[in-house]
Structure formats: structure tokens, C-alpha cells
Length: 216
Image (cartoon, rainbow, N blue to C red; front, side, top):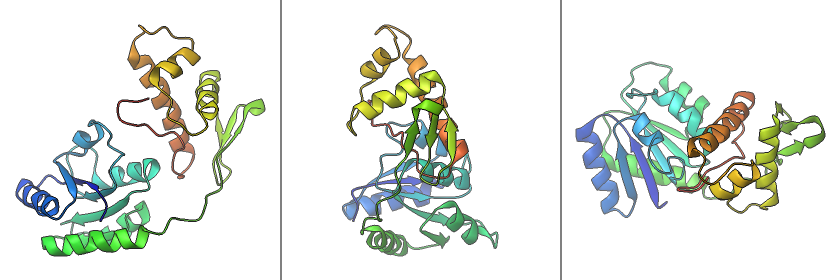
């Protein structure tokens, strides 16, 4: 079973007991009562698995699912009481591996998590790589979608490419952008956010720009 799991559900009775049930079985589960709580937490896209409700405070469950699919390859199980006949189709199209309707037993949730884990245990075939066309100031997604890049975007990507797949520190990125160590750190956050949003608006592919906890 995968090591870490985020449960996003606004039903406290169901969520508290399910979280404890999963922890007792060796899964490091953490409960978030609000989708915004997850997104504002440290490392929201670092979990190995997600269990989501659809009717959530903050952004709704489908929007959260689509966002996760742009930032993570983790398995996603939707457990929801939404009565709409199209709920199953919606969550599968949005990128979930499985949907369970409430009320549901904890045993069934655990079995579904295990099933999704086994299904995704084999690594997918190597994807077509992202490509940067510096001469035309473009980033090309795996399916060929062109993403226009600003001069600042180009410097950020050049810094990441130079790292050869290793994590780049905030300090290194800031220096590459010509910023002093004591500059407002939110300026760098805004730069990365705008680049990531530009990528996500242009393609459904998983963004090549990923963050690590406490790192840029």
C-alpha cells in the first residue's frame, strides 16, 4: 500500500474515523475538511494517494481533481454522496481511477485504494518529453501544444534545465532572475505561479514544473 494519503471531505464523523482506520492499517492518512485547506498546506501535491468528496467547501471536488491531475500522477479515489446520475462519468473523465457512492464501508474504501494501487503499480510507458524552443520563445507540451514564454519564463526554464532534473533552490532561481536575497519572496512565488498557470491553460498534460516542500 502506498505510504501517504490525503482525504478531502467535509463530513467530520466519516472523515475522522476513516482517517484513523487507514492509519491503523499502515497508511499515513491526513484529513482536510476543505479543499482550500489542502491547497494551502505544505506539499499539497506530494501525497501518494487522494480520496476526495465532490461537494466541498472551497473549490469543488471536480475542480480539485482536475488540478491534481495537472500536478500529480498519484492515484485518486472519489467517495461521494452526490446523487447526480452523471457523477461517475464526470469523475472518470476528470481523471479519477475509481468512484464509490456513499454510504460506503471503510472496508470497501480500503479495498478500492488497494485496487487502484495495484492497477497503477506498473509504471506507464515513457512519455513524449516536453521541449523548449528558445529561438521562438515557446514551450512545447508532449502533444505539441505551443506555450508562449516571456523572457522571465525563459530564464526560469533555463535554470531548471541546467539543473538536469535536480531540485533548484529558491535562492538559485532568485539569483538567476537577478533578484537580491532580501527581495520579497512573494515575487518569486508569483513568477512561478504565472508560468504554471500559463502551462495549465494550454494543455491537459501534467505540468513539468513541480515544487517540493520548502523548496521552490
